[in-house]
Image (cartoon, rainbow, N blue to C red):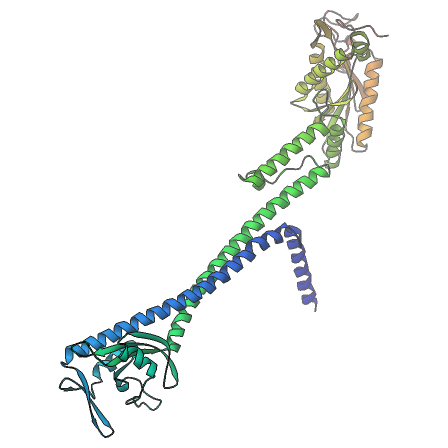
Length: 492
């Protein structure tokens, strides 16, 4: 009982999988219907046509064979004996002659042909059968028997060769061919030669021929049907893969990939798959990229940080803010602000290429994600990015603008959520702003580190000229810089 339940469950699961792949009422069924149904109809029509054709061909072949044998017998007797055919009647006895030769018991030739071909041969004088290979159930020859008067009229009277497919001899149907026996002057028909074959034999030959053709047709139909099913299944499977890919995109999974088997197809389905892939790329750009700057947006950053958090991948996160950005908009116009944002985004993207991802967090804030990096390395990398920002010269309407940024860097913590990691970096950004801007601030373990670099030429009292390093902070690795900026508007 348990085995039966297990087998039934397996069977149901298999049916469910088939329905999932092919659909219970789907394009698969429709395609099979419009291909296999005409194939079956075509096969049936072909078999019917071939049946009639082969039956007629077998009958025609039988006719030719019977005719040829009748010619052979006629010619053989003509060569063996000279003179006309004649009979001598003695009461109930009839002697059959050709010329002066008595043919009454001359069965050797026709019996030999009968044994080799299976054909029955009869020699008639007028309407009477005098020589024959046809026997009754007891083995007696059908001698001195008459024949249908219509045949006598057709063959003897009208002196024509005739073929019949419905002759009855001894309660059995025969195909028969009759040839008139002419006198030597060829003016009078003295009798006829009849060569016959049982209709059952002809039907058997026709059946075998039809059966062979039918088997070939059925085999061809089965092979064609299997190829159609395989081809259709392949098409449906490909469509299903494209549908799955599209559904995953519709569900918001823009990282999903199209099955390579579909992407590598060279037909219309492959082209469709590649178009959907292009559509996914367009959607990703619309959804994951910032429209103004072209770098990743906040949605992408949140998803990436959640992915790292869920997968247990350590990371560092940096929040940066453009210093005095409001003054760019207020003093030089929003177009200038947009140009500044684009140029800053470009530098951030290029600077973060070896380390992780640069994203626009909102407004003039940017969030940098360092994958599999510790806090010290992330802080130094952020300082390198800040150096590139400091070297940036933004040209707007012929005026060169310098830009600085403030950054806060925090390492991920298993005990914190993603939002708490970002908030930790945001607090350090606040410290960078409060500490004078144009700097990087990060906190490692219990020690607060404030990395910055002063603009070229400005050093605080006690700073060394070589690196603008606060002598009191050398061991901690803290580098401090002033806030002067070329072409930067004054803070309100």
